[in-house]
Image (tube, rainbow over the protein chains, first blue to last red):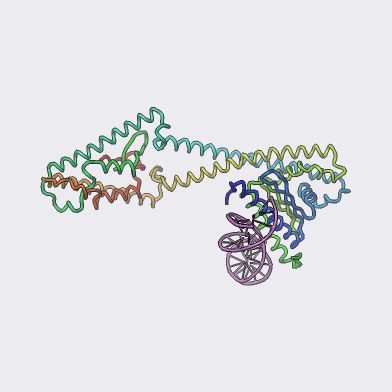
Length: 205
Length: 205
DNA sequence: AAAGCTATCCTTAGCTC
DNA sequence: AGAGCTAAGGATAGCTT
């Protein structure tokens, strides 16, 4: 379940679900006879509210954490005490959040480092035009080395081809890779890109 | 639909519907990205609340937008207004922190996923003494398979060099991949990327 | 008290008007 | 905009464990 992106649908959806929510709340009030307040801000910033018996009284009861708030003849000492308690509560919440935030920030920094490292380790997977000149140099060297290896392989087979006369039973099952090395090339380029390890390049076979 | 009279059922029912209501609200937030606050007092007088991004900040936004709320209490004066301003200030700070926290949390989750994925995909990159016995077993099997494939490949070439005399036109059709070495290679490459393991595990062609 | 189950009823996304 | 429709999936009352 994700945020609706289509702005058209968003409004309709919000409207439907808001009324659904309010209906559920009203059912809860009817069935259980409880006090409820709901405040919703629409995507457009418009405010909608539902309350039983009243939004304001319920919110006030919540803010002061005091059921007797409705009796406004009550002394304000009580209310003020509650408000101070509320501020202390908020401060505690704040301190807690700051703590969590520190942890999360550290995690975030670690993530950033991982990402940077990832970029460093797999730079050759980036589009060529995003590579720096030193990286291009490395890549060029790697490709040259690759070419040499392919040629070596080709030479071996070439030798075999030139010397061979009779080919025993081996023929039907064939041989590792073709003599011309093209297949080796393809295989290497498609299925096994160059893998870098500890600053030195090497290849799969 | 009427108020439930059975006190036994009332509590269960309230609990179920309250969570249903909060779930609906959370869905509304997810789908529409809106600000919501819900306050419910249970039949027993206990307070439950739901808010996105925070109950207090949303309520505060509501109260700020509806100053008339405060007017229903004639005794609301400058002193209380000042206190409320303090609370609003704290709430603003809180909301800000909560926003940052959301971002950091998402980063943290991403980091955790990267770590998990890393552990799954690249466990063999860890120092050997950090591998469990089952992983060591896997690694040993992979190395044995690799060794066998190398030997087969070598034997093939050896045989070719030693026996071959004439080479009937390098079959354009049949050479591709052999039944033995090459197939084994492919399998091994896809299922066991040994090339990533260790500096010492490097095989030339 | 809390979790799981199920038949029943409700909600809703996407659509049309 | 908003109302109506419908298939598909969701919520829940009452029950058991």
